[in-house]
Length: 289
Length: 321
Image 1 (cartoon, rainbow over the protein chains, first blue to last red):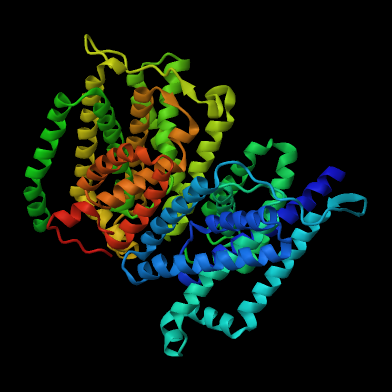
Image 2 (image 1 turned 180 degrees about the vertical axis):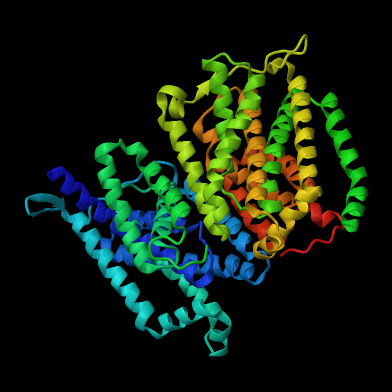
């Protein structure tokens, strides 16, 4: 019983990070109607910058985190401006963006492999303590992960809902032409939306890196999970990403009790196929498949 | 239709020269180059099969490596564990892959948004790969299968690695059959139906085109060919691991081949396959930076030459949607 609760709690905690990554994918889908197959690579870059700043340079985790976020944001904006921006204007956008972002993913992943090597790198826990809730022991690191996830999602939601920029972003995703007519600089919106989505991935990388490890392939594994999450929750829906992420986290946590860990992803992808078969819009998505 | 015919006729000469070239070239090269040519042909077959669904029918699958890998593993395991002749394995691999294709096409056929199709097929391919690497008792997992038997000899013609030239011609024949099958589908009435589906599903459906039937048919044919390509690969290189046969790297190569050559052309995947596989060999000096270059080339090609080399150098006017 204790194991069961422990696994559910762990599932919720890791799932909250899946939710962050998936919301980034969903944001891009909502605004630009594109699936960013290079999303996992921003996660990977975030992990590496965090490692270099926090472990190699010994800067405190909070400051390193902020700097990593800033670097990845700039990298993402550059990718958008240099590649995505031009493809959007051209015919064939529905396939070309998949090919292009897949290419970027291969490029960044192997660049990381060549520059930083294939050795797995570890980041120590940011907080070192154990907390007992109703007799169930949890490391403070995991509590911190969950708190950061909640904080970032609330900030993100508030940003979309109330800030002028968020309103402009939502207007652009509803109708690009009208938004332009109202004087919204849609090109800027796209760039920043792309950057914000990369920030969400970076935050997840920073928080999860001490639990998993930093390596060139960390992104592709998580991208696949995030894809499962957005499909289960419904592409383009923030609530869907949160519910889907935590749901998948719990499912994986419980799945580990029954199946061995190498079957974990088989469960996630089977669920993905099942959802696309029965209800392609996912739990909270709109009908647009 | 008239225009179509004229285009086909002017290209007949080109096809003929290309075919002749492929027939005589192995007589003049040494064993190592022959090896590269054989790999190019296998990838040309695989890429053509992907092009049939992605280029001609608009089903943008990201999981074609699943059919390739399934074909490779089924055929290899049958010949190793059950002593079934690789020649039967070739057919059974195709059938197996096309049954898997039929199964996965059930959800795929209901989807119209391309990214959904991409995610679904990617998920399917990942499952296939995980199964191959987790069923250690059957497949030896990441250690891989080795000592896969070569095609058994017919009379005095043997197909072991010492007689590469025979393997080359065997694969060349299968390659020609593949191209003929694809030409028949694409240039016949089925091709028109596919084209209409690609342009607009709703319009096609309202004109009485049976979407499900056509898509299912094409998907199964494409998976069959990919399975056969996998089987050829397995019995040629005689070593298989999940990451060499079912990983996303295979899909990356196919994508690169078809995008460079030209999506939705017959010659595109063939020209692309030779460029990419030969390029891969010559870029070996770059070591691991090779894949970085690959990624970069994918991005550059899709940005600056999205119609591919074949269209660039022929005078075909093609209206991209």
